[in-house]
Length: 409
Image (cartoon, rainbow, N blue to C red):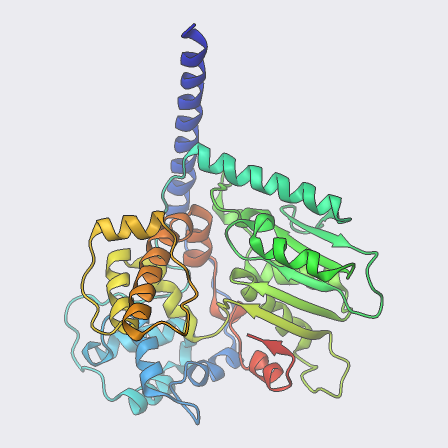
């Protein structure tokens, strides 16, 4: 009677071991992969970089600029940074324009240290280490089952799937028999649960029979590992070009979340670069960007989630958002990760109770997402090796659309 359970258990451990070996193999290949090809110099991006980082011009903000620089150097205060290191960091973003940018930065924050003491690490596109933790087979099976059910639900709601001709892993779920007086709604999901995201559970029933196009990036599902090489994962620019070709310049509304906002930014830049005047026929009628990662101040913040330890990052976040916050224990971490706190703090709570609730949410988010998202293999590759600012960061176009009341952020 014990033969079958032993066989099942043995098969499970064999499958788990095979999955771990595959994960290790792909990660090892990624670590040994040559540096990615840098995008061509983009003068427009360089001209807007310092202004959009709020470090230069009319909208400059010394506090916001200092936070941006501190995060770019993984928590080191700007006043302690060597001038040479800051110049090298600016060169990685701006190339030859870094001299003027350094002068503008010192005009906002003060002069940096003239001497260099030891090594100073900072965030550079395409040069981060790929760090990832293996996800057990049960979790992977659970995520794939959710995706299977989500696909079946979309088919029941009248959606049809078509593959992109240029990116085999990209597909479109489209419901065509919707209202004709409204442009289609293009949905760009983020990294995580993909089609099984709660975003679709609450949104699709509320849209009635409106025409919807969902760009399904299957590789953005947590726990998925490419068969052989992470270098085949499509970039933001490739996704935006494929979606633009699919739309064929028809008017569209856009709803994007997290990583999807990077694709949306690149897509809007491609579609609207010559049509920002409200008197012209715009391809993008409206855009809603949820939890955006497509603005310049966010790039160094993104680096924190990928390079620093959760304890270090949580301590800094608590000191910034919870006045008088003390240290925390691993028992407190475990309690807040297992028991998800309520992210919505009631306005009726007193300041002390509200601060305690914010503390719980910060600890939960930092440690929970550190394991499930920030240390996932594909996410680490995309953010550390395959993202480049000129491809997706807003150069002011989204802000212009916002002034025209065509975006909600």
